[in-house]
Structures are given as C-alpha cells and as structure tokens.
Image (tube, rainbow, N blue to C red):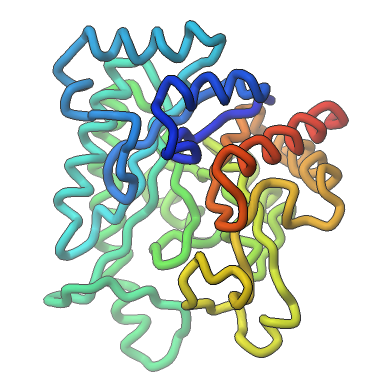
Length: 312
C-alpha cells in the first residue's frame, strides 16, 4: 500500500511545485482532477486529448520525480438537469484520456437527478412524505441507465474501475446505495472509499470497509473532526459554510487531526482495507480549512507513513 495525492489538494501551487512537494513528503502516486466540480488548476483536458506531446510532458513531469500517475478524477453531477450535460462530457473526455494514458481507474460520483421538470436535484434521505420514494425510484431508473452506458464506454477505453465516491447530495452516499449501483451495472463500478463522509453521517468506516469487501476500487485519505457538543444542538445535518470551522458541528480535517488515536486508527484502516482485498494507494485529499494546503498534506503524509509502517 502506498501514499497518493489528489493534486487539487495543492491547487494553490504550480503543477511541478506540487509534484516536488509530493515527492519530498514520501508520496508515491498521483491522482489528477479534471473539470466538473474541480477548477482543474493543473490540467487542460481538451489539450491533453488531442496533443500527444502534452500527454508525454505530463507523464514525464510525474515520473521524473519518482511518482506514478495512478488515477484520473472527474467528480461532478452528470445527472444534474442544468449542468449534467457539461459534467457528462467531462466524464466522457476523462475516460478517453485515461485510455490514451493507460490508466485503468477513474474516480467520480454517482450524480443525482432531479424530479422531472425540476431545475435542482433533490437528495432523498427520508421515506416520508410519500412522494419521496416515488422520486427515489425515478432517480434510480435514470442513474442505472446512465451508468450502464458509461460503464460500457469505460470498458471500451480500457478503464475497468469506475470508483464512485459515497458523498452527500448524491444518489450513492452509503454502502447500500453503492452496492445497489454495482449490482445493477456490474463490477466496473466500485467504491472510491472516503471515510470522511461516512464519519459525519454516523457510519463506521471500518465496518463499512468490511461490507464493501471486493468492491473498493480507490481510496481517498481524508479525516473528519466531529464536535459532539455542537452536534448535540445542531445535529449532523450541517449547512454552515465550511470555512466557519469554529461553529460547525463537524469539519473535514487533515488526516490524523480528527481521530484521537491518530496514526493508530489509520493503521487499522489500512489493515481493514487489505482484508477487504484493497492494496492500492491512499490518495490524500485536503479540505482542511484550518491549515494551509502544504501543512495539511504534510501532516496527512506523516500520519499515513507512520500508519503504514505498523500495518500488517
């Protein structure tokens, strides 16, 4: 198992500086983000698709530092009634680029449709009122049709792992919803396992890993700090903007900053992943608003390095 980096985590640095920082901090693999919800600070999808020289320069910049390009990221809402076509075009382009680069893993999200005629998606989290389940049935019909088509496209480009991140305000946000999509579409679909989202929703990441045995395609290393005293009043359904860290009931934090036992948890995390059949990179994703990007990534790399030294 290796330490990886989603390069958007250092999006405030020029690409080569971000690669230098990664190599200096014991990181081995790179995950590049393209479009969708990413501003793509380090990539130009259109240029990379048509320019073999740009692709060579990209790979050379990574490999010359002893790093390896491991995954492409195309996270967005391809099923959005307004922005979906743009996000879908990005996913299709990233699948094509993955084929050109010989990359077999593309990270994304399930998407979330709206009700027919609506302009905004609706995330269904309760069974009442009764129309909720009617809308949920519609959303699943739309999503399964989309992912059957997209999985076939992925296969045609040599991508055999579409890693879906379980995320709030997406149709797939939990273990049961991930497994439902995988059962409907096939094993090309698997999880991008990011424990940070499961924590704030109240799930246990280690138990969730076990439930996803054989179905984990990629892993994001991101931590969450849950403030029990605030949640006792606010609940886990938090709508304060992320930068208001002193008021929110929970916050995304650098790996090692959220768990009281630090690296010990991440050692158990790595052990559980191996037991579930995953031995790929732990790709650092930074969304800590209390630290600089470099401090956050460096702390995550130190924590994971310590954890992997004591892992089975």
